[in-house]
Length: 110
Image (cartoon, rainbow, N blue to C red; front, side, top):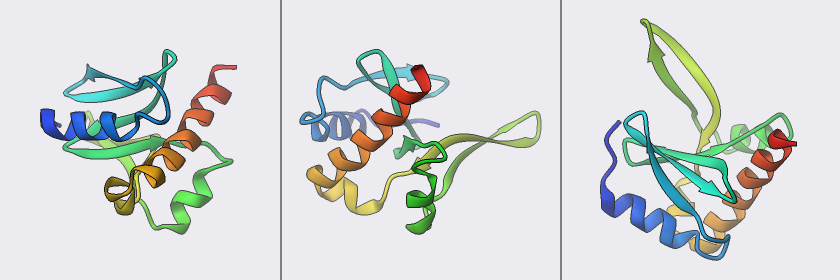
């Protein structure tokens, strides 16, 4: 799950309108945090955004893949979905989707 420093910098810089987003190395990938809450992760230079039942249908409507990793030979799913490809080319779109993911993290923390 290696990430390039350039990709991490690009994503964090593109989210600057959301607030002071920080990337932290975690399990071979990176977690993206705002206000101490993890709302996104990056694995293999792919951005995944936190989801819950309120937002999951939006990801599924865009046919986006759920983050999955292997644990003891079995697939494990996390409530993070691949960000739409157009987000990486449009910072306003990225901030919109990231804000939605951040709200999921806020709901989960309360």
